Length: 322
Ligand SMILES: [Zn+2]
Ligand SMILES: [Zn+2]
Image (cartoon, rainbow, N blue to C red; front, side):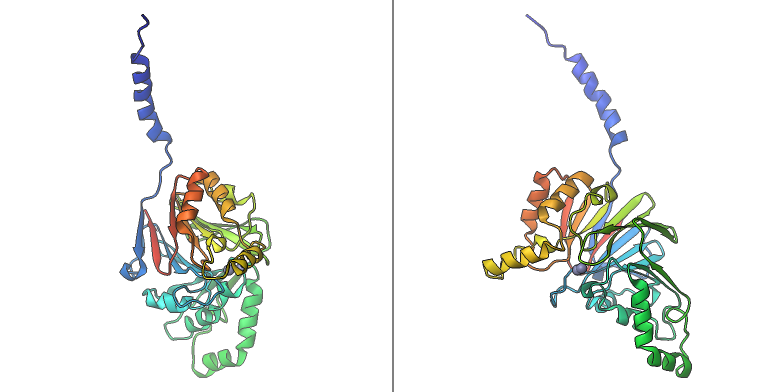
């Protein structure tokens, strides 16, 4: 009778038990909270990411247009500012006058229609913003259009009312994206942006600092550069326009709107491919147009081999990475 050698397998398990933790990817301690429970006057120790607006071009009282507030320690960056995002920022208790970095994934109205409120409202008081850094595609055109359109009003405010010109008319830096890879630093945060396919020039952003990373897809169709770009991110905030079931529409209308949207947004099956390849710790589905089939999406991603968490965005959900 053959005796099984049990010593070797036990030794193997013991060795693996000590080796595996060394190779396991360190995942960030992530705390999910509501914006109302956060004291924004206290800077976070690492990244704190607030979904300011989780909606789409469809006007919806419960979801502002696309907008994401990224903080890393004292650095404050607003990425996109779709309709009603400035109202949400105030409602959450964020001091909008302290935001000096305004980045855009692209210039569609659901991502920039509150820009005038941000640009002028958060500047035009004695305590208002005194410095502005804008980055993204077509920011030069957006800036020029704004200051030209409001020229007389801005002259009145600075020359008659006596407001400082800094932060809107001077002390402004514009970084207009044109390259295949845009890389720069904002204080201690490394920013990388790559083009993604949409109906107009659009960039996805990656923010890296303190060993952690946050990726924002912007609006996008599938592209094979995106999974490597978001590989191992702690937080991937993903265009989920096509995750909706559109069950409020008649089936033919739902099919037709989905077909139309697929010309500019990513299919859920392709999100599954990306997340199973990139394995971000958490995937946040945003840009919500309709009733999101959240459970269906989660099951789809898991079936494709995704091991991370899937979270449906709402206005005011906050992710703190430590
Ligand atoms: Zn768009
Ligand atoms: Zn959009």
